[in-house]
Image (cartoon, rainbow, N blue to C red; front, top):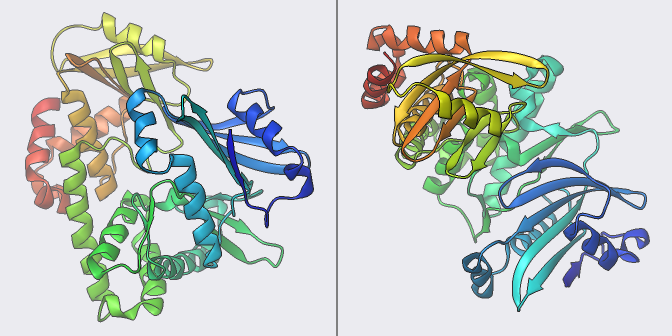
Length: 400
């Protein structure tokens, strides 16, 4: 096992147990709670002695993925190096304590990064998606501070290739000040500097927040940014137009590549991966139960059915629609893009498909809202109908 310790950050308690601790994390012997589990990364919360830590464990399955680590650093090493560099430039973050790699036959099979856990912090996403927990004055201050922090990050040449609200935490400090923390470095690239187009591209990715990102909050963010980087635009109005134009370009790109995830799935949906079946399901549902219902559904393409699914102890009666091939993913992608663009829609609770067919399961009210909207004249869709006329007609044809 290869370990790199950030000696300036680890205390004696951690330092004396570093190797033993890393083995326990790799072998799942340490007491921990799972905060998030993906296909290749698991995020754990655990106490190491008296220190509460967040540990990211990376799996590296398959020969191809292992071979890639021969030619470039592993995902754990890249995240550790980026986090150390960013912390070294003074940007508020959780400075990593250590990283470790396990090897098999000379190839990296697993990696981990250990960071201090930011107690009593919440994701920046929650400030805007769950605003009832934050006073208006706090939201105003955070929006403007976030704009200034973003300008600082760009000035340092830092590119987070999926720049979004869930890359940041916010916490009320002892002096009553709300502090933002940059926390996700897995897809970070550090350059000498960013040009205007690169900055606008990252701001467009950040702008994919739908109706939850109110116009007032967005303008405060842009003002905070513009104060630190006035070279990006002549004035606030010009800046806002440039970001909106770039956002529409980004959403068209998302449609082309079939992007399924967004801030609306983050923390609320789990992956379905079982046999030939893949998809997404709202947290609380069971993948095996979903697949069993999908197998039993009528073969009529686009036909609407009712299915009962358990979520905990609650029975959910959902509307299910069947599609051929990968059309279910396509419909999900269009609905998701329209939500991010600002339409008052809800994502389906379930997407499941096996390559030959697929299904979307909707809450009845979400299905009704969607049908009502696509039955409206296209001009009622505003900017969505202007920017995405083909997708509007496609959605209308498939659902009605």
